Length: 192
Length: 148
Image 1 (cartoon, helix red, strand yellow):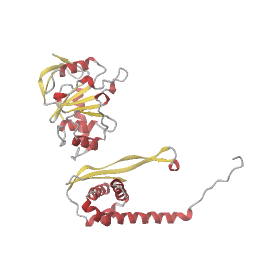
Image 2 (cartoon, one colour):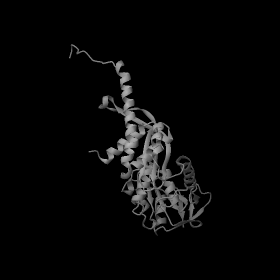
Image 3 (spheres, rainbow over the protein chains, first blue to last red):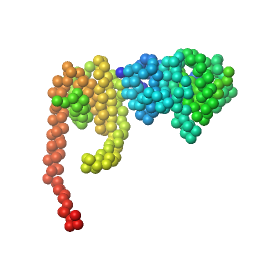
Image 4 (cartoon, each protein chain N blue to C red):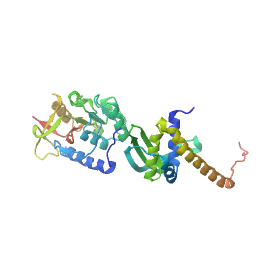
């Protein structure tokens, strides 16, 4: 089995800071400080976010490509989170094969009374490219920001728009590639 | 016949209850193969729960300081230790021995050279304490009351 964070306390604090930066500045590409060597097919940024956010209180759903014995053993050892087989039952979802990702509507969007109980979806994509692509607006974005996401299936941006339409319900989305992440929280609007 | 889980449970218990100094002494003759830390020693709190009289309702006795550690040997065996207190070296040695004891080729030697002597020392300590406190033992009993 592979080791996790070299210094669980300080490393997870640093990684959490980058996660916070990403979710409060939607569309911004943020470096994730981590020296983790995760089991395939996880990227370092994906693994770092998982090790920082998951614990015994957070049921996790893995897509078929991620649900390999090495990945499950590694995540269970370092995070102790329960696994669920139904996407709707998960508090966190990890999609490692972006081309075959389920629609965002498959995940728990919370309820009108408790929108905070919705799922956080981490999607591992091919690449994140800033300054080009979709125009994003909303809280945390001064004017507008542009983000292009490589590898996502054709209906991806429609799913993101549908998710925004549910506000204040809806899932929060993190995208990771290599050592960087970007976030599309439910509050972010996608234009053109 | 003890299952592999029972056997491992026993040696993990003996290693966790050994004194760090004893462990260090016993390990002097053991050559530790290359290993790496999966989880460096870290200290935390564990809630100990009990049952009144051993069978009653569950209640929280109190929190206890525990240090845990996990190591992996080159062959892939993972050793785990949870020890009471804050002695990180104790947790590390216990985890390393747990990993080594899972190797059938080394088990016999380690059982004889490390685990058994430690278990004997612990039993002796328990006996000494029991003998020391036995004279002060008070037997309580209740007279049958008239209305019952």
